[in-house]
Amino acid sequence: MMEQRRGLGRGLSALLGEEPPTPAAEAPAGVRAVPIERLHPGRFQPRRRFDEEGIAALADSIAAQGVLQPLLVRRSQTMLDGYEILAGERRWRAAQRAKLHEVPVLVREIGDREALELALVENVQREDLQPLEEAQGYQRLIDEFGYTQEQLAYRVGKSRSHVANTTRLLSLPPAVRARLDDGSLSAGHARALLRAPDPVALMHDILRLELSVRQTEHAVQVQREEPKYVFPAPPKPQRDVDLVAVERELSGLLGLKLTVHPSKGGKSGVLQIRYRSLEQLDEVLAMLRAPKAR
Picture 1 (cartoon, rainbow, N blue to C red):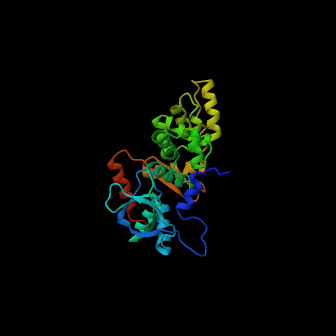
Picture 2: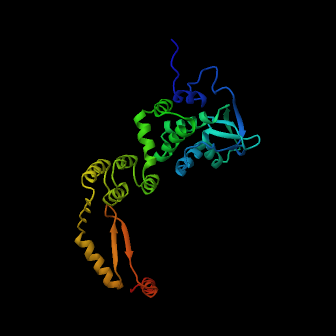
Picture 3: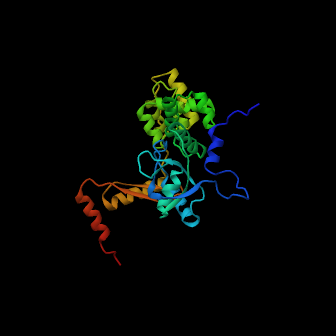
């Protein structure tokens, strides 16, 4: 009986040359060196943000050892003698930072649907995508290429429930998606908010009270049972009496209100001085510039 066709998870490894090397061949057949300027990002790349620190670290590695894994590309439809990157855009960006003139590539004749699949699977496997980027990639495959959630889950190596819950994030209000996108909310918080009667209001409570995902799930249940319930603010921590005394003494010396913000360890901190006019600021500067009494 013929073995059932497996998802792209395995096929991607083969295309990228990640199979275990054999004594007869250290690199995949068909690898060629292409000038960096003849490559451009793929139009199906789901990632919108690239970690600059990660790319800088990768650039250092590439500068020392070169690009060890070839980029997967196809011939460009918009650039003469150019290539569109299907997998490996991080390596291409890092190679530019490392001032390489060319990089190794594997050229494949791939259609748009498989190009989107490859770009999505590569990032999902390496956990490089933000939740909304992953959701948008799944939704494109569903909308543009007619995938069902079951088919898509099989192709990307995820459960159907994962695909369903991830794509549902796109139904959240724009204000919530913005907080998810900038990292203020985790994917767990966002998934919990999907069941909330008023996800925007509850989002503000999450940020204000710094609720955990489990606390958010409980808050959603409370909001569903009592829509008008307002979550109380946590009690303000008591300030150290010695710190308050220092603030009062410094405020008396400067004639301005100030606040001391110690670090968690208490060995360092920030001194915040409030002034109401430029004249007050000039007075503070004059006091700081005055010669010390001997």
